[in-house]
Image (cartoon, rainbow, N blue to C red; front, side):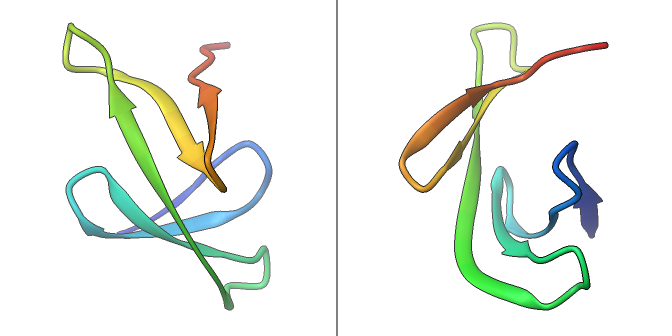
Length: 58
């Protein structure tokens, strides 16, 4: 499964909450991301390059 996030970067999940990062043209960039869930079980943050990015709804 490949998902798009706001920055137009794609990810491909290789296990629950863990993904490989892809450039906008669909090529792998060699980094990984993971998703941190809150107490309610919903995604609260995305961790990429050691930094946490809070999930924002529009």
